[in-house]
Amino acid sequence: MLRKIALGAAILIGLGAVAGLAIAPGLVEDDLNRVIPHAPYPVSAEAQVLHRGLGIVDLHADTLMWDRDILNRSRRGHVDVPRLREGRVSIQVFSVVTKVPARLNYDRNTGDEDQISLLVKAQLWPTRTWSSLVERALYQSEKLYAAAAAEPDQIRVITSAAALAQGLEAKAGNPDLVLALLAIEGAHALEGKAENLERLYAAGFRMIGISHFFDNEMGGSLHGIDKGGLTDFGRAMVKRMEEMGIIVDLAHASPAVVDDVLAMATRPLVVSHTGVRGVCGSPRNLSDERMQAIAAKGGLIGIGYWKGAICDITPAGVAKALRAAIDLVGLEHVALGSDFDGATEVSFDTSELAALVEAMLAQGFTEEEIDRVMGANAREFLLVNLPAR
Image (cartoon, rainbow, N blue to C red; front, side, top):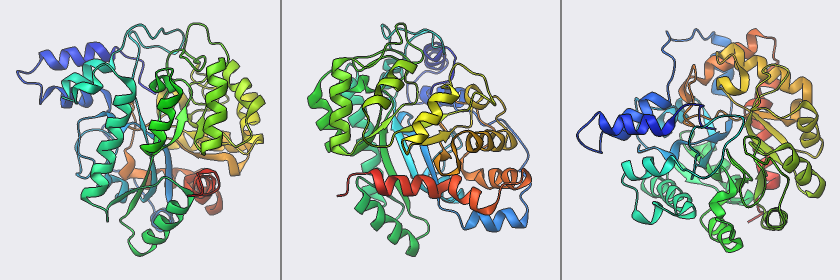
């Protein structure tokens, strides 16, 4: 989820502030993907030991949108492979963003204008991506596969339950290995064509969010104009995604879409990055009743780290939101969904997840609760719900 700011204006300012395009995207990301400056978080010996034993899973980061080599540690943004290793993240879901409306807000957006086009051109992406949303998604997947091909001992792309099991086995002998899963933030990337779902599946995408910040061919957005339910095309695509083993993500979906998907779904669903209204009454968050209904069908709720979802973005605030989610939907249905690198301001990056462990211990979480929320729930969910092979 992109922060409620004038993204296009920030890009234009960045472009105008320098003589060459090569520097501008970095200035833009410096402004958008901020970590609030802070002294090192104190982490007790107990938290350090517990953190080292975790296999953390994060259900949502938008890192592939930015002009960075994820194999190298960057001073910008929130996620790269070196920082994932430091944070003990074993599985990272990389979601791709393909279009964002102008004058972004949580209440009403149209898809008439697109701010990502500016970023795509500034970062010198291939011309095929300049006007095609599906090509933007495919290009971002290519970036991830290129990193995995260059350093197979550092990162591996996972497309099935069998591949995930093999990856976890390999990770037991190589703790530095990060497993990666591709997702799409908003099915507008299909461009209204069923055949593009096949193309995206072939490219490795295994989780797709129905909507992002505007209504699309599949259905309404929580932040759209009509906020309607599934269209006929949307129903057909949900059915086909279930047949293919693509996990349906209801983050950003309108309440009507959530209800329609719940009525027809035969497989568990996810909300990859969100908050809980009982902690943060933001229009970004679904109602408690819909969150409970998603969990009741075996679903998974990923709790984010940014203000629009949880209001208090400190490690203690994230821990408070996780506790509220557990109380609302049950321990086995709660996971992490950071929204790192989604033009979000946060109080820690992925290398600092030990601070979240410390905050959870301070709030009385048991070791079992910490293990399940920070990785075990999502790992088991993926092993069951990804395509078998």
